[in-house]
Image (cartoon, rainbow over all chains, first blue to last red; front, top):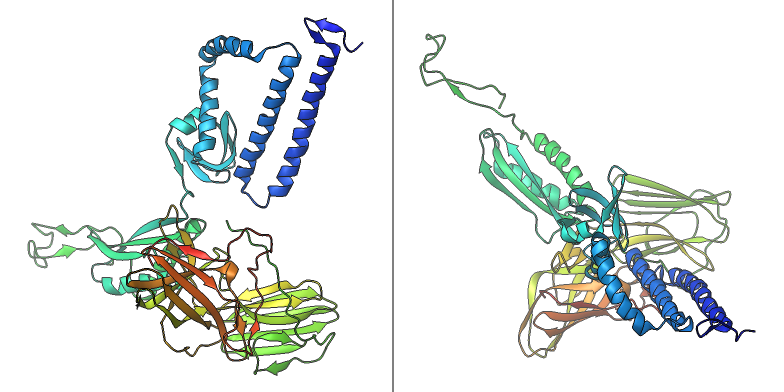
Length: 281
Length: 265
């Protein structure tokens, strides 16, 4: 009964075998993937795990499919020829889909981003939640779900904020002209020295960068581990402000000096000799 | 992100006094070791106190004006205070320690020499149990700073420590720092100037007694910008005991215990 031909040379046995192989491959792959997930979860990062698991799943399923096709009377060589023509037609018809697919494959090979990275993809800022074969899923800092086609991720401008293990941040601190800039620099340097997450190397830099209109500007550059960069940047600015004030150094308001050619009260003011200071600096 | 699994190595120390009650007695002689409950330790700005109340261990730590309290339900456990790898405070950011030499050392070609440097220590308080120990508290009074070794895209973050280099073991304060005997082996055919040494926390072997904390390490200088560091599993003095290793490596783990310096030496 099993040797009865159903269509062409395909027997009931062939069909049965094909179904068994496909079903076996499907459930076998599921089991294998589950086992792999459990066994290597602690040894590889989440994104590596996703790539390994997906590659294994699709690889086994493709092999199973190629195995059963001859059983069903489909010759792979003929399929390749037909597939070539069909591919051209489908390719033209679904250019965007194919572009996204190819971009997705290249993204997985090149790996400019990983799951969990903080990124800016063409103006969309957030955390990478998933990198799929057609699209990349980003959770914005406002908690929104954004699906970005892989072609945009691959060809657009991509900034990965956590790709490097350290990152620099800078402040420009303005102090009054009457304040001691060297004292201000030493106060800031001491604060940096006492902060564990402010790296020793690359060395921090604190220097007078500009004699501004209203203030002497001190530039501060600090390197920090990428994981602690944001918290440190927020924390240090307020510490610098408080410590400068504790040392009698103030951050001035913008000010403008006005010279009156003909003062309103000529008894008190000589032309061009008195300034009106609008601030307390 | 570094994933570290604690594994505490039992040392077969003294049995704890169990279910002890009453006022804690002050102990000023030995800072490190197994402690009988109740106890109180004071050293400089540190005060540690633990007592048992109805099966609940109350542990207090006061350090630099900051106080912490932990409560643990115990039955057969005790307390152990040990110096540990200086890589946990303020958080476990890295498992590398960089010792920057205050003055560089010039090493002759083919020459091997032993020098002494200091290293920071952290203090771990553990709840000991016949089957497995648990970390209750880790703190430090040593200066904590970090530094990048290498470039931002491929370097490593290290706990940074600046140390003088001496020919004799320096005096050190055991709650802040220990002494490392470092053997520098110049295997190249040129004079080498060494400014720093980087060590892997997974290989660290701290030994201690009542007065000192010590480690022994080797730095093989292989090339102009290539060196390998490793620790020796032997105490500096015969009466020293091996400290608890929080960065212990599993026997089957692929985690390396050495570190290969491939940048500036």
